[in-house]
Image (cartoon, rainbow, N blue to C red; front, side, top):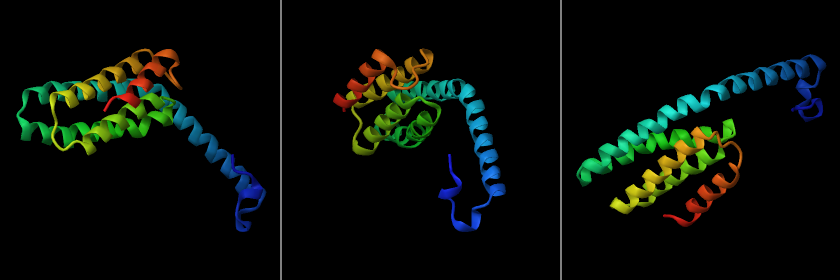
Length: 150
């Protein structure tokens, strides 16, 4: 929490400090309300990723690459950006893993698609089991796989 001493001189008065406390509390309340909805809306995003992967496996190289680099990347990037905010860092890690694989792969082979599919399956596991924080042993297993699989 911001204290009066951390504010620039122009803002150092009790009224501003009280206003900051109210704004901070409102922000925390909004994040708390959104956290309750996080699993639901992110599950929808992950199911979208699963459907995209089903299509990707059926497409030719150019069509496949377009879908991967556009729709799949964008959705994985959104998941990456939201996870930590709602205490689901594994979701951020999985999203980051997909994004990094997409960015560093010049030509997608079945091996790459299988890794992305596994990441998506793990996303569903994290959400279904509500693996917040480090996710315990399941989270450790996922983290270890992410560190060793490219």
